[in-house]
Amino acid sequence: MITNIDPMKCTGCGLCVEICPLDTLRLDPFQEEIAPCQGACPAHVDIRGYVYYLKQEMLDEAINSLAQCLPFPAITGHICYHPCESKCARKEVDEPVNINLLECYVGDQLLKAQAVRLPITHAAKVAVVGSGPAGLSVAYFLMRNGYEVTVFESSSDIGGMLRGEVSKKKLPQDILDMQIHHIKNMGIAFETRTTFGKSVNLNDLWDDRYRAVFLATGFESRNVTPLPNEIPTNDKGTVVVDPVTFGADQKGVFAGGGMIMNRAPIVKVIAAAKRAASSIDRYLQGKDLKKDKEKGAKPVKNLPKQGVTRKTRQENSAGFTEEMAAKEAQRCMSCGGKAYIAHPEDCMTCYECEVNCPSGAIEVHPFKEQVTLTLPLP
Image (cartoon, rainbow, N blue to C red; front, side):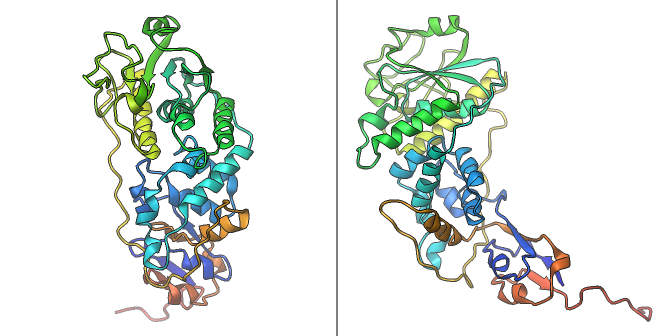
């Protein structure tokens, strides 16, 4: 029977799981070491995790896994430049996994599902000024942490540069509208036609018992939006913030997006917004903003290479169907995942897993039960 899988040798390729005739083995993709695709993603999306759920035809779990990392996957699936594919280890076998269309597929399925209104678990309220990618992202991550969030937007439409600067061919307006509607139904409140500095100012927000404010009015509004004198800016109109915490000199005020940086890919904006939301959370809980910051995760060193079956990459300009998504998910090698013995008693000692394991991590004993010794060992 199968006796051992060496975790130091196992690369997570999943071949043993696929070929086991009695479904004895399982694969655990949720490891501390991050796969190359996740390491290349500025937002550190757990691609290995949600694609693994797609392999198992567990769509709801795949949606929830991706939603923990990305606030609007239906949008990023269309306009992200997907640096993850450039580092996909599958390139050494045939072609990288089509992470782009897999993300689009999961994002589209998310919009079809009914939005779940998240519970408020903190008394503190947060105001977000600006409904572009940075503002929406911070609001989303704070809402998932249990905060009541209101987004103030000077325009009558929500979306910021997503609506005004992104090509409608790359990002169809119906996708944008559906994604924003989904976020609304999750519990984020929006107040449109409300210009910060005119319709509402910092004192108004403090009076309304907002305990933190995040400024994300966009790149174009640097020299247009009047900011309070207590929020210092440089000669370019950029808000001066701490590069680690995104906090301004004014207590309780944070800033991000175009207010502090030049134009950047949306996934980098989301990554920065996620860190800013974490800082706001720590501030509202009275914790040191810089202490115990997350350390960089270690990358996977032992990657699957030999023994992996070549499979054709799925392509479709109109997007994936359910069948295409399943086929493409099967191409993911789950780099760094670990195989484990789920049902050792079911092993029939066929040796298929040991013979076909490309990393030599599996040991199979020829007997179901250990043979007792009849003579004492010297």
